[in-house]
Length: 81
Image 1 (cartoon, rainbow, N blue to C red):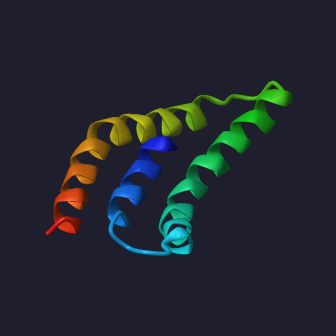
Image 2: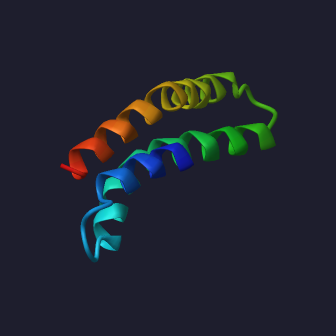
Image 3: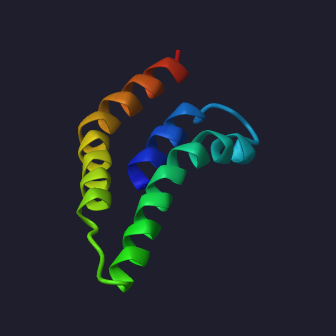
């Protein structure tokens, strides 16, 4: 989640009073993570299979780890121009 937050922060680095804009940019990206994580926890309470949710969360993590530095650098480069 902090990788997604870093992308959002790099997008609005040069804008004054950007707190509301940051939350509007980042919140839609956090919702799938929260949904699948809460679903995995609730299914684990009843001893049901949670591998699907964990695979989806791992996929989001891998994509974020590989893509966030490049997207953040690109957004910073654009905002500094």
